[in-house]
View: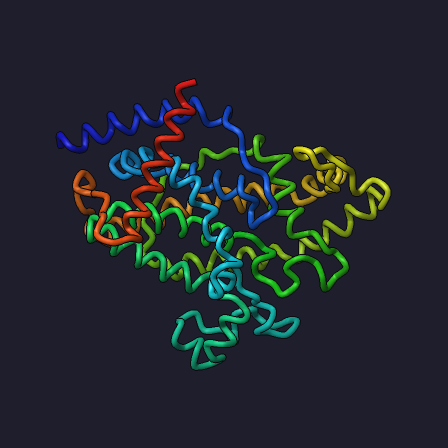
Length: 335
């Protein structure tokens, strides 16, 4: 009871501290899945949905969990196997009018038996990789390894977020097959950049998920179901606004950059009727719930016993990153 009381006090203190900084810090705006700012928001707000005991630990390392939410994107072109972990081209597995999942087993081994592992890797493995990452996070909790808990928590947040993006479920991922090239960055980066401050991020509480595989596949199904609307409403907005007003130029640092015009984005965002916000909120809730589920499935270990491990070069590197990130954040918070 004493430990729980201390965790609650810590949770309240750090929540108040970081909420004060939440809407004043600058966000990195780069074109990536959900945009860097989108992934950072998802991991950050997921922390606030955790129960007090778990939140007290995670919120102490909020800077690391936020900054490392984009690590999988940063290594996509350096690690050969990384790219496939961010998407799944469902339309490769079915013909028009068929159930997208009728020919795609959700069990990894059954899917390999049906399509071969090379095929799965070629067309994306995000739901299976989320399940794999959940077990890694669970094992890190069991081993009381704080370095790995934080690493896996930050990165699974990225993959879960990607699974909530409709354009991560199709071969037509950037509109290249429908003459809508650039829609990927438009939907998950530009709209977030312009609208994210208007969204409601207070969703409720993380919940225990009896089956993470079932939940991640449900998220992928929901994302794919929204794909037609993503493409349809972009075409309609393009016609309504007209080609002359679809794009504009904005100053980004020292560079004048061509972007989707604010007027066009407003028309498109309105026609989506809250879709981007709904997918963002769903991602936040699921990230938080998977974190919580991994801890529960690990036997709810005493979180006060979590410690940074330094038994190898990799673990030393993780520890340095965590400590340096926290140090930079504290320095920035004091001014």
